[in-house]
Length: 235
Ligand code: ATP
Image (cartoon, rainbow, N blue to C red; front, top):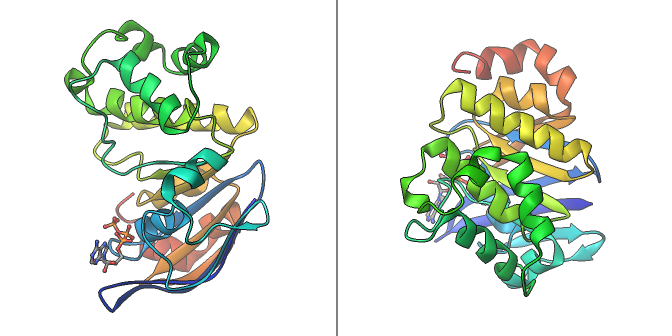
């Protein structure tokens, strides 16, 4: 569904991705793990059209999308939940969700969409009229995911959804991702919590200094002593 071929990205001449190739199949959870600064966010941002590719190809359903404007990529169904959540604090939960629909070019309101989000995250239904700036970190993460879902993604990209959240909330968020995936949604997940990510995903790649250093079934990478040695210490 999403194929990245030999992708290179540089910031002011400094290489952040040095020829990355990976492929996310329809219906799977694919995770990209790796240390700080390895290039994980850059990968997602390049796929979403937020940062330009220097070379290489990004194919979404077989169509090259590199160079396309970010809003058009989102409208095509590739929607990213950004790191740090970025909910719009002075707006209510319901207003943030409505914006997610509009950002993806879907006009009007369809109650059933919002109901699906409220069913996935019941706390958002309880807080629907509350300003989102008043939500806890975990609730803001749920709202950010809900807002992305309102755009009806065909693939959902997530950047560090566990960041800064208490373990019980992380579990809730990841259970929701698994539910969404079982419902057919393809997910590309970037995580620093390698163990959790590999336990959740079907396939995975490990990125270091802008290069993929391991790739395979998530269950194989969990059992790989080199991966465990490098990445499970902190998780
Ligand atoms: P983190 O977990 O810290 O977000 P990451 O694996 O997502 O790390 P990236 O954020 O993609 O890594 O960063 C990859 C490299 O590119 C790093 O060396 C980083 O310093 C650099 N970089 C990222 N964004 C920019 C930017 N806007 N301008 C210049 N350099 C950047």
